[in-house]
Image 1 (cartoon, rainbow, N blue to C red):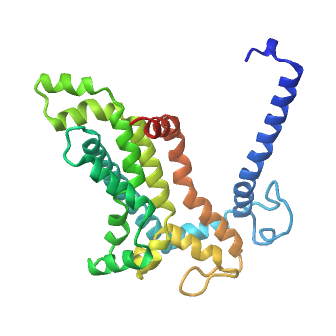
Image 2 (tube, one colour):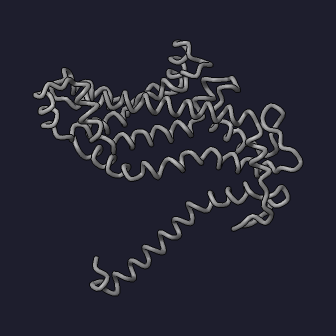
Image 3 (cartoon, rainbow, N blue to C red):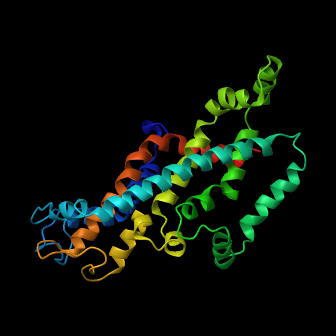
Length: 291
């Protein structure tokens, strides 16, 4: 809307909307900012009551303590392996499945799609999932955290609708020129599917990076503990860590260590998101509406 053509009521409305968004943004940023301030606070001021816009006493002791623990690096390694492997395999399998379901000539396409959508509303639950992983012999294995996340009915449907909305004439032209199916997928359709691929990668990566519940069920080894599970254990404990986890010394406050660990776990996702955000809205909208 042209600024010169705005009426007085329009300007008042925009003022209220702007003020409302500023308040909402502050509500969302406040927990992150207080966590950041607490992580850089000294042991004497970390647990002080009240809003802290800036650390009263700067200290890097919590970060030195966290990065000095082998358990943190082991959890970081497990989370990176899990996130990268699951995201890459999930996006690949989902896109191939979406391509097959988007082809009108595929036998039993509607029946297969119905069965996939059916699982979105009716599932076996936690106990059958655990028994399945146990019968497959994956308990205590890294694959127990990777294999269950290799597919998703919702993501498959969204990707199918996106691929189905791509111009079919491009595929026909390539086939007339002698291109086989894999060449059509990798050289023609994949470059056009960057929005949905970015959306799938973002959804899966964030979910896998923050996942901890399945690790509680399927693994007991500290060597396989992901970062999110370690963060959870630190957050739920009200006092200092026990001897089997992280033991906070007298120079480091436990709350400061928890804050530093939370920020360290958030940093990779916060760095990746801006590069994928530009594809996010386009990929979701096209994938949800077309088809």
